[in-house]
Length: 194
Image (cartoon, rainbow, N blue to C red; front, side, top):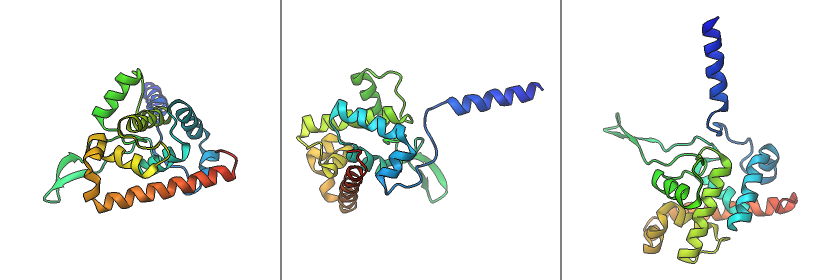
């Protein structure tokens, strides 16, 4: 009986912990269905839009690219000689794939000591904070999903140096993010959520 209660306690704690989810919404290509399935996501993004001015569609497209809406997403492992594990590609984690150092800067500057990368409301607020900073420091429009994504991916200093210009694959990804943001925006308008 003691083992049963211990197992029940562990299961309960596991269910409550973290605030993230390991499964993505069923339809990542339809913003209206995504919002219907995950109203907390939409609520978090609207709050971020009000606080930081980053459109919901830009947030959605960036999260789609970074984590496919999986709250505990991590980068893949690196291997030497194809078999010796060297650790993860980076410290990126959560919906927004925030790096440890950038997340720590956000927690400090935004006063969000209890924020977690696997909690959608914190991840979207982080994204809004970061993109708002990119607007202030680099002059990137908050509606420019491609440039916001490039600054997000490369870091503001990398973007300012133009590091992205030598990465054809990244320019293609940023164009895809922009297309997805436009698609999401049109869909959100069609269902009265924009």
